[in-house]
Image 1 (cartoon, one colour):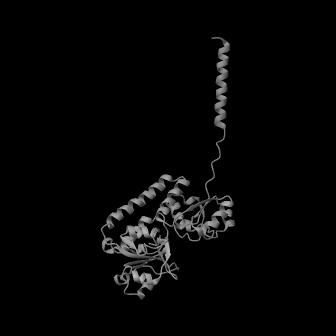
Image 2 (cartoon, rainbow, N blue to C red):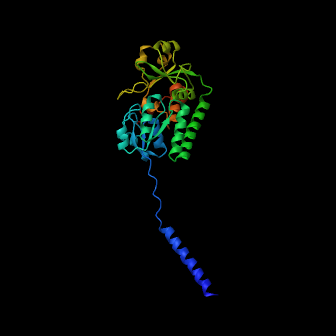
Image 3 (spheres, rainbow, N blue to C red):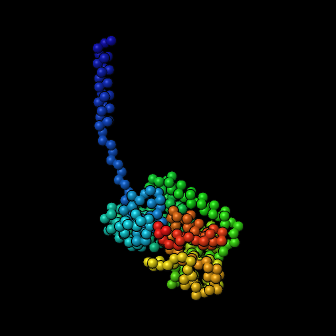
Amino acid sequence: MPHGGRRARSGFALAGALLLAACRAAPAPPAAPSPRVVVMAPAAAETFAALGLSGLVVGVGDFVTYPPELAARPRVGGYDAPNPERLLALGATHFVTSASEAAAASRARLAALGVEVIALDGASWEGALAGMAALGARFGREEAAAALVGGIETRIARLRERTGTLPRRRVLCAVGRDPLYAAGPGSHFDALLTAAGGENLFADGHGTYLLASLEAVLARGPEVIVDSADNRPGAPYGALSGLWGQWPLLPAVAAGRVWQVSPDRYAVPGPRLAEMAEAFARFVHPERFGPPTAADFGPPGGE
């Protein structure tokens, strides 16, 4: 073989070896920084925990009380007026909040500062499930979110099958007092009590939550009252007539189906929706599902 051919092959081999060594020595590109998320909505906070994303959360809104590891994060204020300086001090890259009109100004303010704003519609059942899916998709937990939402839908479907032939008792879901506010059509409370075999006392109302007169409540005669209006520290929860005991002829009072419950347990349409619906079945039809348990009344995590 001519010496020139051997020299050429040797040169190619040396060049290849040098190229391979250079490729191996090249530094890997830096990893993208982890998101630093501030979560305002309690339901979103519970969703982050359920999806294994608690480590991304650096701050929370004033109404986040559960789970404990997120409730202990630095607080940044309420929906309508979060503290932008505090968010920036936390290095927030993402801001998860409500899509409500009350939070519109804060959404615009944070977006103008370069923070990615994620607005979730938690007013309705459909919005709550869509919000869980959206957070999973945005933060790399799409499959886990699909499993979470699918599990909720499966449990609710089974509950509907069990309550399908039961009498539809009229249910008042009181969510505020002085003045009295009730859950209306389209709210997650409406979906819960319907799945549980009830009929919303204000199913014909306008809006997901509505101002209700005492006269209308007395005239419509609720057979079940689920009252989540008392959010005072140390408020009593359980099978208590409370202020409704003033009207002993109300069917719910006469039947002993007035339930005082924690708003922290039921006003948060997040990963516990199926659990809430199953508790509502005990509120509405205790003769079929058994009486409510102590865990059905108080705040989550207090069982």
